[in-house]
Image (cartoon, rainbow, N blue to C red; front, side, top):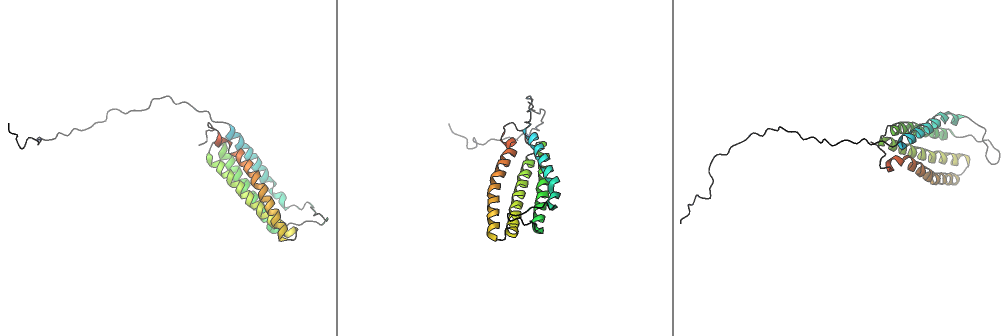
Length: 177
């Protein structure tokens, strides 16, 4: 038997078919509602209350309450201290109120805004203590020592506050969006 040399070739015309989508598959599984944890809401309101208290106390920075140093001499704070203390206090408390409000609405952005308010307050505290230490204590070394001690203690205090604020992030059912 002899093979035809064209036997490996297919011949014909292709037929095109139009694909019509008739069925849409939709997931019909039941949606289980997840109850959001109230920790975010409670911590958010506590932050709002605390920040509001700090905001209302800012005008008291300008009062001369008759503070004295160790020798009994009256202490008058420099204007640069008052500017730094009031501006950072206002900024941090407004950020805290906004962040607390967002936290009560279960928004993660609120937690980050509160962390930012902690950073603003810590840096402002360092600047204010540096100014007070240099002016009132009379030496740059005393001002630097006060600033270092304030910064060291502030790191631990803000770390504890940060852990409290971050509780909703640590919960598996926190419901933060």
